[in-house]
Length: 66
Image (cartoon, rainbow, N blue to C red; front, side):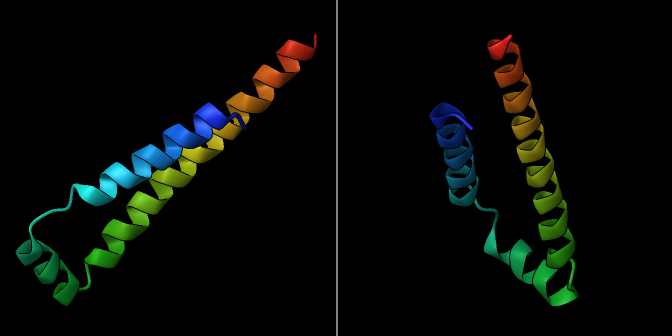
């Protein structure tokens, strides 16, 4: 994967960590156990985006070789 794609992905992860929600809402979700559902959904979305980027990178490399 290219350096640009990797740096963009890292920047996206860092900015989502900075923009946090209110702590009251997080405490409520944590006490109800729903925070794990939110984390699972976010992890699934990021895994899908990462897999798609890897797929595109391989496809582009294949086209460049031709």
